[in-house]
Length: 245
Image (cartoon, rainbow, N blue to C red; front, side, top):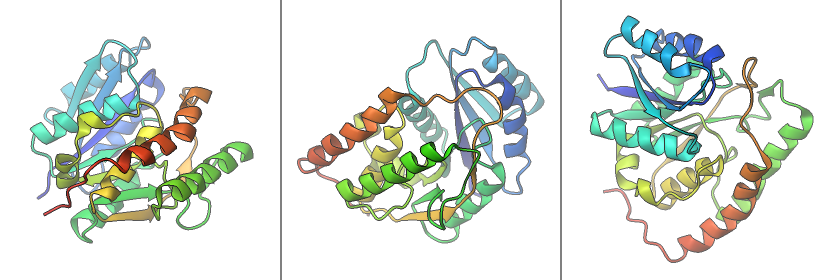
């Protein structure tokens, strides 16, 4: 049986974290959960600790003292998961915009169908986004087209944050060289995985905007993606990407 770890970064997610973790643990495929909390003042971490007591050996917590960005939270989680010997490591939001019921589909795409990175895609079968304002849907969709044009990747949802990595991908990527900290981190991880020659597969999901808590999206995050993608592409011309053995 494979060992599977779902990483959930949090900042002020007390309204969601107590529901999302039991939903992940209830899936027919066994998953462990690692929460990486960036010093949430609302008590998110203490709720996770309560769930740790109720689910010994299945729920884990990394507490950081301040907000350091989505990318660094995932990198910390990747290092932790690799060190603990997990076979498949997942990225997932805390706010139910990613449906826990889709986790087994992502798992099977890697474990049974041979993908190295399975991506929960909002755009592989039309536009599957619920409760987003039309302007945000258009901006996200156009952003993915823009990234495809700049990078050459044939991925419909380049900014997707619901993913399953096989262990060998995260062992191959030089994780501490990943530069982006915000949502462009998702682009850089896919691009780097693709440049190394791994197999990326998109799986259709329905993305539902959060009901509780507040979005962390900002103009700075958008600018990082807009200009950073060009810089990332240019840097790639001078970098070697060893192919998986």
